[in-house]
Amino acid sequence: MSLNKTCENSACSGTICNDSAGDTSQRCDKAPAHFVSSTGIKSQEQLLSRLIDKGLAASDVGVGMALLGTLGYTHVVRYVPAHVAIVEQPSFSTLYRDITLDHAFQGALLTCVIRFERSFKSKLSNALANEAGEFAHMERSLFEDEGGWKQFVDGSRSEIVQKARKGSRYAARIASQGRQVPIWSALEFSSLGVVSKLFANLTACEAKRSIALHYGLDTSFVESWLFSLSFVRNECAHGGVLYGRELEIQPRAHRLFPQVSNRHAFYQVLVLSWLLEHDIPDSSQTLIDDVAMLLSCGSLRLGLAAPKDWIDDVRNVATMAGSHIRGEVARSSVE
Image (cartoon, rainbow, N blue to C red; front, side, top):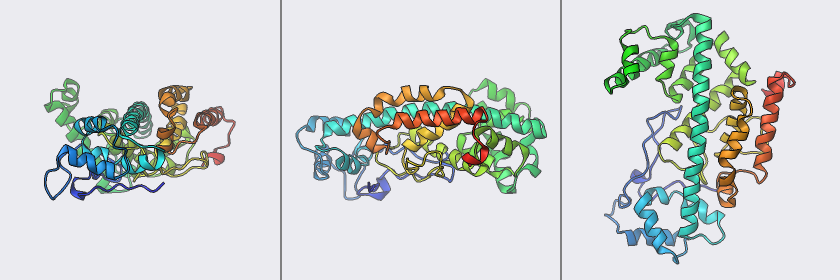
């Protein structure tokens, strides 16, 4: 499927301005419906006509007006090329359905990413503290790039201070300790994007190796998957689009899932299934339950590049993860 991610006016197309970790420098792309053309403000009727010209049936314009009124042209138009290619008789009603399902899928995915994020922060802070003490992140020798190390130390402190100024009593208590903030507090207030950069900047220390070993992966896979999950997390949190889209920050393809494209959003389900299964046994079934009804819709499944037998794929991943945890799979087979 070829993806058309452009709009008539590139300045108003909802372009994602992200850093390499997909951090929160992204901006939400829900621009006002009229903010789409440098040639002047367009009426709702003109915008509706543009969508019809792109291949949507003109039979349910009332739904189209509702789409523009609630979501805005800039957001809606990003779904149209893939939707027209997937659905046999695309209309405003089918488009509304698939956009709503994509949003619901993003909500389910975001919940899983947050669950993993919480677990990963805990494991990383414990591993670093065990190796270098409670102020491990202040140890320059643990990090490859000095600039990245200073950015994390200063940034995590700044984030705590900002939270304290906004009224967080917990952050205020941490901030009162001065610059000597323990590693678990520094990670508590850091985004997944920041944490992914911290992990990537670690030397080949025992903490980094132990984290990778826990997940049955090479450290390069952990780094890649963290960056991609962070990107997807921010897309979901900031009203982005996953349907019919190739991700700009893709997780490194693994032979654990050779039958699924790593370029599209469904791959994240398999990644999360593998990671969470190592943290929370049987979590894959919860993930299946969260998205099963959504992916029963064929057009959404195709829009996310999920295979028809996707449930079997997730269960196979859970089985492999369980075997790895029990030591039944040699580490070399999952690297």
